Length: 340
Image (cartoon, rainbow, N blue to C red; front, side):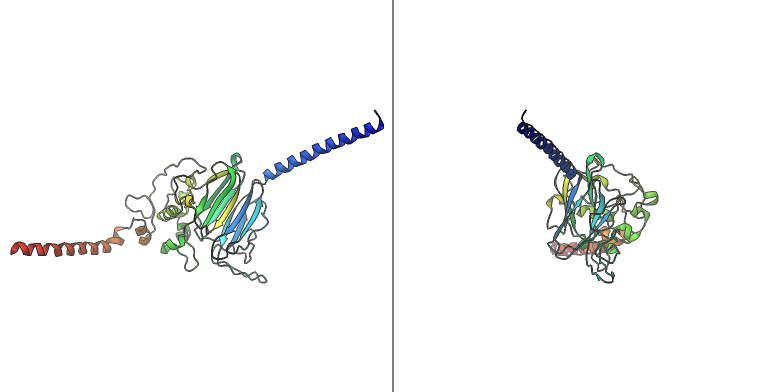
């Protein structure tokens, strides 16, 4: 072999080895790209500014921010690593003083006094979106929760991915239908029954800390009726937790409409089947209903068709008198004719 041929051989060998290295690097990079479990994109469709809060669960890395401003029509995206878990929520009515750190939000406030929440969570009531990426079986688990109350509409939709990958959330305006006993005044939020009353049967605590004893209350059923796919109370897992593999996620505040959320008929929850929990003895129950109702909260019960006799008796009394008067007015002319 001549010198020229030998040099050519070495050069070709070098190119071949270098190509293998490039292919390995490319393959490694692609695998690493897969390891980045999801891209979260936040979109504000509200007519007002929303300040999303971000809370990573203990032991999870930060997504680069713990809170940010999102003006009407604005959007922002973040990349989350494999195995990340945490929650998002929207803060409203915020004012921040960058120099003093004395800011606050009307709803969803995290108490930091700043745009960044710095590891603090939302003060209830607040609508929450919760995620665990690449969990059991490589699936992402996600839900939208009203367990801590409600402050604004929020919907989670998937992009790509495989499996159920259903949209979930609460697109309804629950503030407009919030019972008086759950309202927070002029802040524009609706408390959960647990937050409003603090009793174990509403909070699923103490002897009620399991699905067989903690029953849905009339309040959680009102939430569930308006938002069938959202968590309405602590043990609402069968119809409220969803899974997807390899997806990106769109989190929308005040979505204009998401028709698939108006019905729970096509749900694909993470837990198949629903087991009926045993009936417990609540503080106050409507006869034969099996749902809890806070004492004297007759407005909420009337709205759900389960008002107590004590509260509706005056209405029934007046209605009976009206019917009787109408009947007499109808019969009197007929009686007079017979007499003639």
